[in-house]
Image (cartoon, rainbow, N blue to C red; front, side):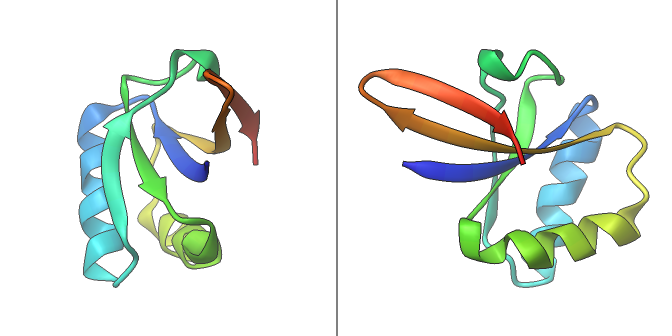
Length: 85
């Protein structure tokens, strides 16, 4: 399974981002940030691969100071792999 996460250092900004993405029609949800990312407050916005470009445009306009970046998360064979996107 592959998904993209918008990782934040602030829980409030992560939840605000999810609300903003949903308002723009991008399917997003708040999820726990995997510990393998070694950053964050514990919450991230999960975004589908097909909606990543739209999410990047929306986040660029948001001026989120606690935004760390986008990460690609792959799970397989019982392990979680996190890569910077």
